[in-house]
Image (cartoon, rainbow, N blue to C red; front, side):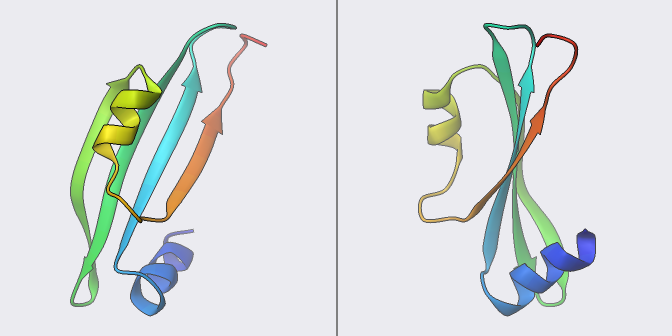
Amino acid sequence: MVEQVKHILFKTVGKLAGVTVSFVNRDDMVFHAVVLSRKRNQLVVEDSKTGITSLDELKTFLPKKCPIVINIEVGECL
């Protein structure tokens, strides 16, 4: 997976965001986000934030025009 992300960053885009959506229960979810960029031949964590509880807060955190990879975590809430 890391090699795939490196390939995407090194060959196509300069910045990429990753968001994990964790369902706390049937009605609530929390977001965790990270923004990666490339500096020379390395992946660099530009910014990260955990415990985001609203889509508006997530939208404010994420850079504009940046591809997003989404991961959904579902526990025993469904």
